[in-house]
Length: 103
Image (cartoon, rainbow, N blue to C red; front, side):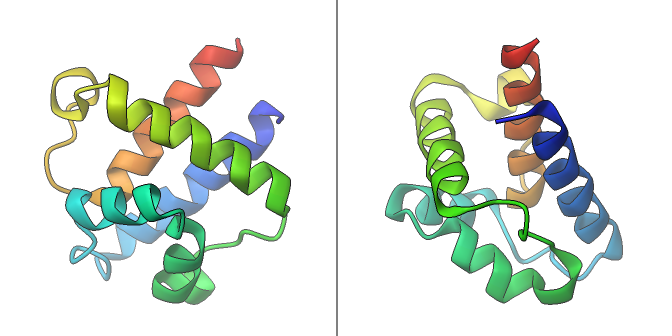
């Protein structure tokens, strides 16, 4: 997966956060959907036109999902990323971590 794909998704999610319409998406909600493997369908349903997942095929989504599951188990998001509340901010942090791991 290319870094540009990760940054594209991070920018898209960051833009959605900036609208203020998604404050109801908490860390707990996102964690639940990552664990269930439904995070991408959940995001598409919730964010609708504010999120473009067109460049992510099933294999890429699966790869990201596995990476995010690994981060759930290995990283304290509050301590490492400074994320305390927003599930979308958690995903942006995970995407930035993914970029760093690929550099």
